[in-house]
Image (tube, rainbow, N blue to C red; front, side, top):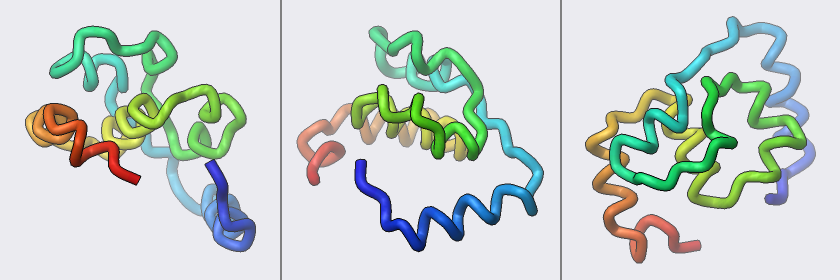
Length: 91
């Protein structure tokens, strides 16, 4: 994944001014509608996780699950999104 350097620097600076928001467990969130969720997602993500090198290990689907669970997306909406892979995974 490629980041725009000036944007990512602003994002990084903002981390020190905010309380860390912990989402729900990403594996639990994804398991609601998908049976083979990676153990890499067995955690509650915080914003700083999305800036770490570890996030680079996730594929696009896993990254979407991590972000959407962190943001607290309704699982029914997640089910709908991942049930339509032709629409959900377009680039």
